[in-house]
Amino acid sequence: MTMPHPDFTNIKTGWEPRFSAKLSQLPPIIVGVIAIIAGALGVTSFAPFHFWPGYFISLIVFSLLMLTSTTSKAAFWRGSAVGLGFFGAGVSWVYVSIAEYGQVGSLIAGLITFAFISILVAFWAFSAWASWRLSRRFSQIPSSLWITLGLLLGEMARSSLFTGFPWLLPGYAIENTWLFELLPIGGIWLTSACVVLTASVIASLLMRQNNQLSLILVVIIVWGGAAFLHYAPISWVQQTGTLKTTLVQGNVKQDEKWLAQSAGQSLAYYQQATIEHLDSELVVWPETAITYTYPQIKPYFASFSKELENTNTTLITGIPDVSADKQNYYNAIWATGNGFGLYYKRRLVPFGEYIPFAEYIGPILDVFGMPMSSFKSGDENQPVLQVGEWGVAPFICYEIVYAEQVRRMVRDSDFLITISNDGWFGTSFGPWQHLQIAQFRAKEAGRYVIRATNTGVTAFINEKGEVVAQAPQFERTTLTAEAKAFTGNTPYVQWGYWPTLLLLGICVVFTYLNGLILNRKNR
Image (cartoon, one colour):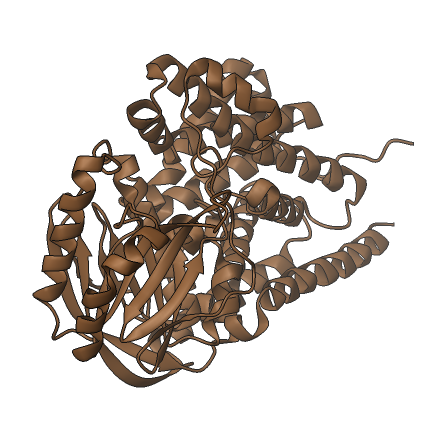
């Protein structure tokens, strides 16, 4: 016997069935356009726009489209359309780097960008398909919760498979809401769960779905708790000192960065800017500010490092390193002067720093003339850098988007440092999204984030996730501020995913029990 659809069999009156019927009568292309527009609207909640209702509206429309789908195939394609609008607008900056610096031309760059976006869209499509199927199979649990679980698991898969791409996660849409205060408790996955659950419950209420009481109470408690933390904040960490820090923004053009004639000029500028700030305890240069390899530059830097040590100044810079046999190259961070340490980047950028399945697709890229990089990733367990008495957790480029990687290194650190070269993305909003993600890591960890970039956005972010000092983009400049050192662990650093799993577990148990009770009453 076929199980009845859990969403509409008991709806007899009101506008909901008429809405569902009219939606089903629309040509699929019109529904697709609506879905794409709704997806694109969601991007407005992220940097640089910060219009937080946009993503909620987008997810409410996504949920309504799922609730009114009559087949799993319809749910799949509707989810695809929303995802296409969202990722098509949200990560359009990928095209900029491929077209301008990939040396493949606009057409090939467009095709590669479309292929990349299609992979991201697939996670939303299968999430929609799975949540629809599960809501049919287990009708005791409301569809709104299946939508939440489906999309959240899809985003987790997107964040981990093939090194992952945890960009534009739902939780990043809540920077200007009370939910931002939940980051120290459960991190980006707790806020993501709260965002999706809130939107799906609102959509279910609009459709007058049954068995929503438990979820409504959870949403009210979550938002109420977040409001309490906003107006009566809890101090999870303790300040232990300050560190006068100077960030050097070289503003080296990307197409000139690796030219031999530019390497010496850039290095001379960085050194001179550092000499002018020897009163700072820490000077930070951006990712691959030095384009010579570590073995090449170390002898040359001996006297400069000694001068830094004599003034109690530590220099941290991005630099490529090469193994003794010259077979393996690494994207690295080097601390010298009054500090020490060498860190190798662990999360490499696919097609930028390494080629996935190179033995299969490398020849194809050769045909298109696309340059290939061959960096190796560093070991998973690497010590923090030392800056005098302070421990500094280092992250290169988009490593800062991996919340779990950051969490594991926070306990041994007093600060977080991230260096990047966002010149790849030109004037797009990619660098601003990158900065916003760093703000979330600061809030989660209860640590200052010191962020040095080549072209911007160079900034200091405090332990509350607030940008306290920022340099203008696309200018050769320096930025100096007092970075505060903190010790102690936030609940998220201590427990990781567990608060999120606890919230979702409570939702599943209570809605399941509530569904059983309702089913017995209806017999």
